[in-house]
Length: 300
Image 1 (cartoon, rainbow, N blue to C red):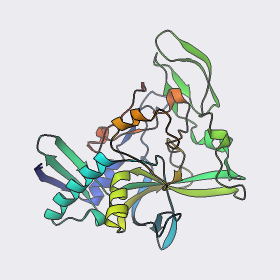
Image 2 (image 1 turned 60 degrees about the vertical axis):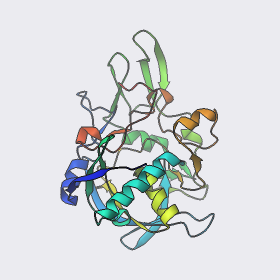
Image 3 (image 1 turned 45 degrees about the vertical axis):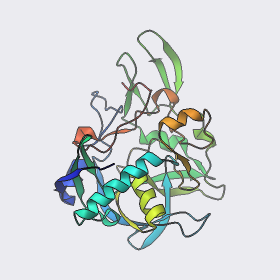
């Protein structure tokens, strides 16, 4: 099948940085009920991700000459997305652009499908405090100070508390007590010997581009690292726990997940199931057409 793609615009990195600062959370608010921006106080730099050396070894990200393990929030890859990525890669090559070393945003028109953007993969650097490998929950809660979730009636609930009270899940039914964190949060462990602050580089956008380049092309790839400008204003914790990049669940498509009622290894959300999607990003609010959230969960 022939695909017709047309280059519409190249977005320089300086402009792209400003655009990224306008990305908003889908359901995280400040005390005034305004959607918060994950990158409002972030800085952006380029880094390089290297393929896995052999089975059992992690992919690595190199930042300023130092290599660290690359983590993912969702160890699931869809073949349909890889096929789309390959088509886009061939199109970029015809324009003299390499997906392996993309340093700007690309806007393109796919005939019959619409307008899209492709960016360098975005990796977020988060610092979590561990106690014998367990994430320090009081410290993590403190990161949510001043942030709120809305219930079905539009009431704001402060996420800096360990419990939310009188949380409406629809116009009528409410929960007297709702734990802020997912029930798995207290038992997630990253190694008993580890305590203190540890940095995690987590894939935010571009998992399939990374997989395509690292696995199929077996080449390094340039990425954007988003991190806090200062320790006084850290990034809001990511929506899911960092997990090793491999092993990977490989499915033919998102629809194929319905064949597997109990996937043994998928994302582990940070927040309670009733609010687990509120930390996802709305890229379109910043004018970026990079993908849509596939979810049956209502976000208020």
